[in-house]
Amino acid sequence: MPEIRKVLFPTDFSELSTHALPYAIKMAKTYGAEMIMLHAITLHEHDPNDPGYRFPSLLSYCDDVRRVADEAFQAYFEEIGDSGVTVRKAIVQGISPYAAILDYMKEEGDIGLVVMSTHGRSGLSHVLLGSVAENIIRYSSCPVLVVKRPEHEFIDPDTNEIHLKKVLYPIDFSKESVGVVEFLKTVAEKHGAEVIVFHAVDVEIPPVYYTAGIESILQLDPKLNERVERKMRELVGEKLEGLTVRYEVAEGRAVLLIRELALKEEVDLIVMGSAGSHGIGDFLFGSTASRVIQKAVCPVFVV
Image 1 (cartoon, one colour):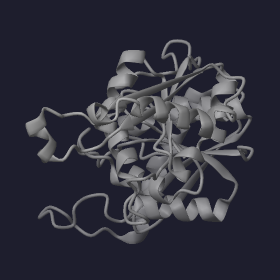
Image 2 (cartoon, helix red, strand yellow):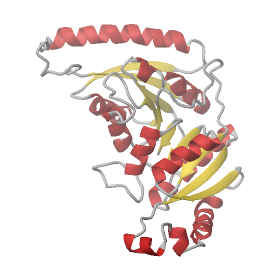
Image 3 (cartoon, helix red, strand yellow):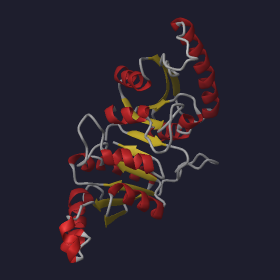
Image 4 (tube, one colour):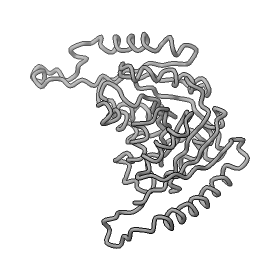
């Protein structure tokens, strides 16, 4: 895994986006990286179709937003205090928050990790993944740690210490999901975490079998789970050598099973690829990844 020199923390200063700040601080400290706090100025903070909307003077608007951002950043600096992390702020302008953030990442270079919330001021609900987060995850060239509120935290809110004991690693055998393993190992090694490698046998049974009382793929192929586990061990077992690793296989919808397993095992972190066997190219980042984030009960690392 490439060395992480810079951790980017995009924020709109809302309570939801600020929830990711302790994670950004801890990730920067863990990897000895510089932390960059980024705020994007966009013209349409509110709906231009609103009858009460008035198009602002561009210069006065940007000046006002920069002033407010500087005050908010100062509060962040006070919260960070003497954590030992090198921090700087950046304010950029763009036609949309995610476009401005992505442009900044390209110009800055060396961004090794993005830490952000699923939602900010424009968040709708837990049902939808925030459009800013979705586009950053989709187009980012580096891993993205996505957090939301409320969820199971692996940073103690009282001590700000990391307690990362269990990491869930969903795998669908695609090269994208297998390619995550190097990053996964680095994270697990740093924190001494157990890794649960998981595959969901998500196969529809043709209705023609129902009349024969067959409702499960395992009724047709009783040794399928055994072969799936063997395949997981072949693909990632050697790469995870030295870690405490457990392999789990279950039949059903991947997203629901991942959530259920995370709840049952009190998983601290999910690490997965941004696309897999159900991905649809550049138009959508992996449908399973997006739905896992929507329903996740803990932070998710998307690589």
